[in-house]
Length: 146
Image (cartoon, rainbow, N blue to C red; front, side):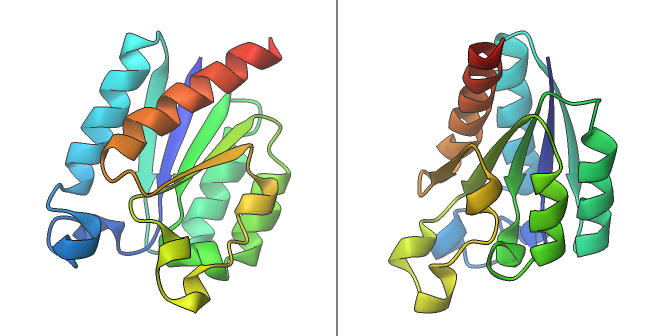
């Protein structure tokens, strides 16, 4: 089983940017957690972070027919990334939307996700543990489809 982990804009600044909201762990720390969880469950995990929406769209296109699941923390693209929404809707596998914080408990503009309607499910508000939880959920959902 293969999982693609996608990280959107500004997630490369984790550990430095708003640690009171996003914690002090870096993106590398979260990717290591996700990779370990995947390995424990017999899956492989590839990761891409980009500040450019087009790079993430291309990665989703490349995952078609290659990956079984996508775990995506789209960052701010959550709220306006319609091209990402469209790319994800063309992916046949499991999609897990992931957020460190709970967008529904923050500013009103964060309450709408354009990713959620095309996601199998969402993991929000569990901090760094969300990466492990999202990988476990992705593996379980792929296995349930088999």
